[in-house]
Image (cartoon, rainbow, N blue to C red):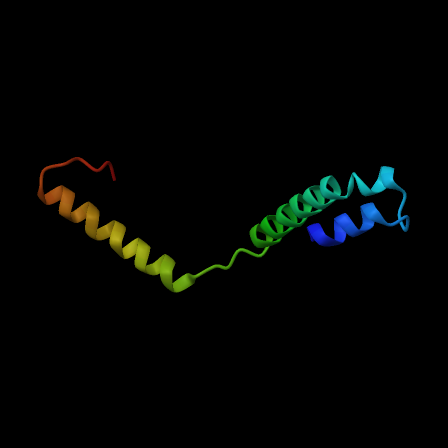
Length: 75
């Protein structure tokens, strides 16, 4: 990437005022890509019904265990 940038600086293919800004554009583009990937992952967050059932069973077991130890668990 840096070799391409240096080559663009040395040649007159792209105006030099634009060439100096290419690393900033690259960082901004990578940031936008990262935000898109996170947003896409949150929009299509997978649900796991089997894991939800196991979690509910673990909660019931924990409440029973704490109740045996004399801890008030509320409900």
